[in-house]
Amino acid sequence: MDKTIYTKAYSRLVSRLKKARNQAQFNQQDAAKKLKRSQSYISKIESGQLRLDIIQLKEIARVYKKTLDFFIA
Image (cartoon, rainbow, N blue to C red; front, side, top):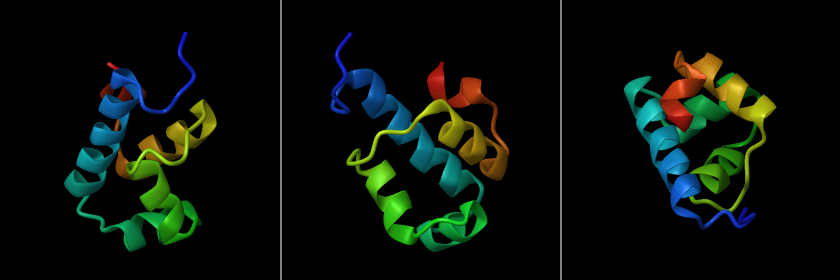
């Protein structure tokens, strides 16, 4: 399995992260505040510069009010 963050599957995940944030009507600053992270953290995730683990994804899903399936299906 390819570990790079530049795979098609990871690209889909990043796209869904942005979509979920927009559907929650958060800008990156709002999302960062809710997740108790910096705006640059959100930016790096959404640009594919930072790889998420499942714990981080679960927290994002909770804040964006989405199921994990939304991101990985």
